[in-house]
Length: 229
Image: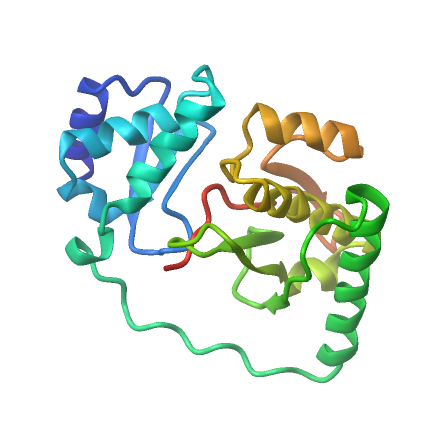
């Protein structure tokens, strides 16, 4: 399936991709990092016009308005009709200390909102995720409306790394929240990079953090085009 899908995408103009991976995770519809393209398996059944929209969305050279139009078109395709997702996983049970930690993260969001965004970002639920092993955090966006639903922060990230790094991750996800609330594509393109540099954070999807044992390890910081229907 991946080989045929890759062949179709390349015929439609896809460039600079070495590998294509498909999945049924609806929180990541389309993402491109380090020449690896990840997209929902349902796009294998999409017509050429939708795959052409995927190619346009991934092209950073296109004007912002064109990429936004491409994003709308690819998100309108009913991927789950052709590749249903498995039953939803149950939410993790709260652990001792979670209430205080979530209060601290919520207060952090409020403070960073005032300091860096003038308080214009909306209040948003913050969730701890024990399933994030290589990711530090992610913004979940509603597929239908484009509104941000929640910010998830990796439990292992909070436990292993200094609080200053958790603040960095929160601010990264808040840039994505700003993109979503401004009607911009939620990605790591030029707009994200400019805003990240303005706020003094790394303008990349990944950054290297030490493990608790002191070894350097790459950790994926955010998810591109995160969406939930």
